[in-house]
Image (tube, rainbow, N blue to C red; front, side):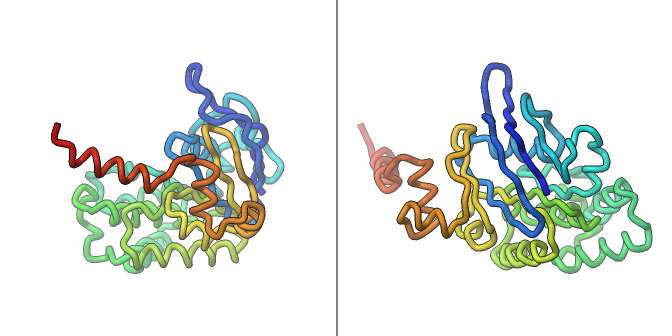
Length: 256
């Protein structure tokens, strides 16, 4: 289990994440939502051990992750929001590097890499430099790199970014299957329809604060709203999106 206890993160005088607490059990898929700038990616980076909380603690199996961050990261798979990978490497070389850094046996690593590239339709391009890949192709490589070592924890920050519809459906079903394998999964995305389908519980973050933490079904009942999209709009947006769209069109057509 992962526990986040009273975690805050400040950059200079700005509080990006404010006193956030939650827990995620094995087999649970937690949806972590919020508008741009709400603090989602900052929270994910703290969970990944890339940022230190200004206050509070993050526990895995009852132990502060900072006391043995190396052991924690061995059990962690992370798909970041930005696909920052070495552009001069091929997909095969990049995944080989990741597997070796994780001390995977060479023989099984080669088989895993070939299988992943085949599954994601990248086998014919596996020796091409990543700089020649589309965003979706690079995203597939990032997902494969997060899964190579069969992690116990998965942090997925916008995992569907750039993916085609078919691969997006595969990832949706994969998340459900991994939850059945008792993985701890934290899923952050702006694609609310998929989030509603795969997540057993939702946290909505607004200006660094948690404004909702419950199952989608309970939130629907409590707020008398039919979908996660409408719940999100009610809690976070506080604006008439149709009116905003109309203003954009009016601005486009202005000639004075």
